Length: 429
Image (cartoon, rainbow, N blue to C red; front, side):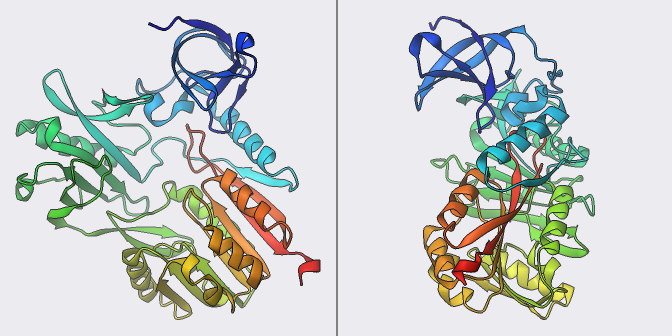
């Protein structure tokens, strides 16, 4: 059994873990969740990863003045910064952006007003506790261990937790075992208060047609390949009730399905969309990449001459077309395509390119196409500022970063989003 270490933690890593120097090993550091800078703690070494020793907090010996009591026993699984005063969370995220972008002034960091119950998507696992099926999260650092959640999670609102608990109660009263079910995804709308549930099961003979839920506007049951850990549909077993939710962003009603993507903190996302609107010149010709169901682009239609919205997921692009018709946005044109495969063709007529890519950032082919076509402005919203900084550096010979704004889409966690505006440099004209 590993020996306990008593360490002084002095900083946060960009990923949000507390770091402590290891004097006896020189360059190696110890990392732990649940510890804050300025704290002394006893930790248990768990494993080594990329030159660092990953540890688990055992005992806090000296607490930081920024420490607060967590609201949940399972906080390390869902929101490890629950133990940090919210103002300190915001300052830490601000410093992350300032360190990643030293050559551009951070205009401001937008804190969230709603810091609990803000998520519109929760994914629960299952476990059996005291002989009964319960919702669960995986224990951080132990992928095979699951922590029971008898009351759900406080990152979700009351309606989402109620729907999740109703679903697991239905399963438990019918004697369904944890080995037969993979996960439960719950989605909620801030605008309407409606909730939808998706149940992923590993038994192809699951009695899907018997499921009845009063607290959900609609639900679906999917058979999901047991060999894959992901909540991915192999086959739809049954669907009842509503097939979509509606969220309102910047005055536009947006329909999106249970299986689709939508920004998790709709309130802060709307503030980010407002910020993007400020960066769009009148009558601009816009190309929007990674456009989803139209959540950003449809809010820009009144300022744009034309918007070409490119999305690789065909289902999302179809929902964008539906949302376009509902909004009467004749100058918004969804296109189902992979941006990197048709980049130069789609970029040529643009004045402004708006991008909101996944965590991996921009595809290298797209970066190369942007460097060749050189649209006047790039408006880049990112959920991974480190990769955003990488992409900006690759375009640094042609573009100058002129605006940087941070947003706290994920209170109680180290995650954040950032908006970077790049202008074509005069010498690149």
